[in-house]
Amino acid sequence: MAPANHVYPVIWNDDRVLLIDQNRLPNEYAVVDVHRYEDMAWAIETMIVRGAPAIGVAAAYGVYLGAREIQASDRSKFLSQLEAVAKRLRSTRPTAVNLFWAIERMLKTAHQTLGSVDHLKTVLLETAKKINAEDLQTCQQIGDYGLEALPSSPSKLCLLTHCNAGALATAGYGTALGVVRSAWKAGRLARVYADETRPRLQGARLTAWECVQEGIPVTVITDSMAAHCMQRGMIDAVVVGADRIAANGDTANKIGTYSVALVARAHKIPFFVAAPLSTIDFKISDGSQIPIEERHPSEIYAIGETTLCPVGAEFYNPAFDVTPADLITAIITEYGAVAPADLRDQLAAKQVV
Image (cartoon, rainbow, N blue to C red):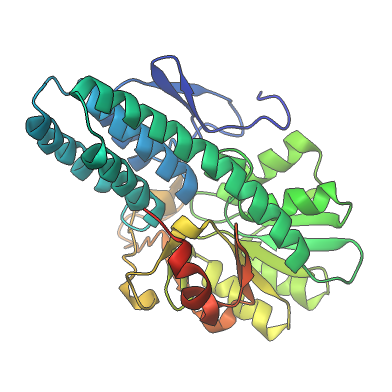
């Protein structure tokens, strides 16, 4: 079991990357050693590492691992082969924009760095470490700004979250769960309600596990119970993460988020999205342009070795849905809580690749 308050899903250690295998939680805490960029691509595809910010950090290290494997000493040949590494890493998960943001930042560093190929590789590792450290600081800022954005009454809040946007999904503090952590530290949190988040159960497996590690009161509910809990007055606000946010504020997050936003609006409960600035894709105008990953149907028809559905049934398994901006109270980034309509005016100029 990981020590409380020290959950870091992506760590550089000597000459390799250490990843918490999130597929094995909560029953087993296991660490995977990654030495090669192809292994990192596989880890991202199979969701050993997951969560948009954590995927971005992992991809940055993946670019370095790929650079380390390149034997060419000629700069142009090196950069050409590095592009191939980047292409493979880009192919792993289509929705999470942090993946693409981190890869582009690494490539930009490579093209702008002068000196030998060996020096360039050293700079790429330093850049990946910097992306890692920046994300940790960013999430702590998101948590603090989120605390300020939460309703002032009651004095202790019950918050609902969907999927896992915690330490496991970032460099180690969390976006939505970063807000939860800050509220808990400030004495403003009564309880977290964690949607189980079918079909991969990230809420039941991962969010609940993180909360238990830190002694944060957590109640797991099925996804279909959220409306009931709101109707009973059990929820004061909703805080979720994001995998990609369009320029107008439309937000892609784990499948089921849109449903939660709709019932929150029906019950006049504030609905917050917490995400780093790197999650906002100012290149797309609205959510209709966000690619939605579809995953294998086995995630629906089986849990472990147990088959749930009859042979002959068909399946549809989108991993994400898009919540329209008009259902979102505010988007909380490291620069504060911003109304979706104000994203471009207030934040676009701050985003640097």
